[in-house]
Amino acid sequence: MARDETTSFDLDVPVGDARRQVTCHERRPADPMAGMVLAHGAGAGIDHPFMVGVAEALARHGVATWTFNFPYMQAGRRRIDPRPTLYRTWKVALETARARWRGGRGPLLAGGKSMGGRVLAEALARGELGPPPAGIVFLGFPLHPAGRPGTDRAASLRAIDLPMWFGAGTRDRLADLERLRRVVAELGPRATLHVVEGADHGFAVRKRDGRTFEEVLDELAGAAAAWIREHVSGDEPVTGFR
Image 1: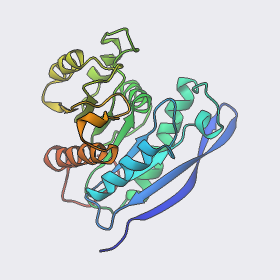
Image 2: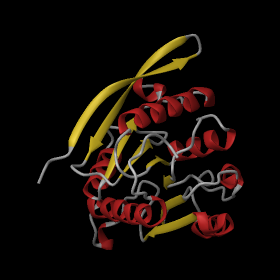
Image 3: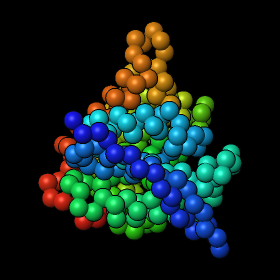
């Protein structure tokens, strides 16, 4: 069987009057059925075990990925970039993936781990990204700050008319599960929730749960890929976002 192809290159992101180079990793399985641009969370970049592991798991399930750093992460800073910079980085990543995916078969989606998904939802709701992706995958959507349950951050989700898939753990301190269930229900048929029993915000599980981190990531990727096939996939070659 042919091996996955992994390529790394730089994205050129406008930041004020300057330009910043950030790293993007492209991972393509031998015969992908879909592609996904995937952003990291607030505290760890694209070389974190979660981002590497979920990209590998998605490849096993037929999904090509483009993972990219935001400028603050590329520079090794802890302070998150201002929203305009995050939105512009997302736009450049989507435009780049669209160009590189052209001629591929299946839909091109966007997704994010925690903050990466929250910023994606905000940018889409504000119309900052141009043509939208075919669907969205949220991995640990941060519905509220830890210890302060609420749903204010769901406002951007309500403004998006796209298929949405949420992967959430039962021990996620940034997404009270009952509140998240209500949000997904309010979004109607365009939203799907997949719950990972015993997982925390980073999708780590306890030893007594009897599963490895790799098995959890494979569950996430398999469930997301199945959802794409049922709700998002198309048979015609993609020439851009639809």
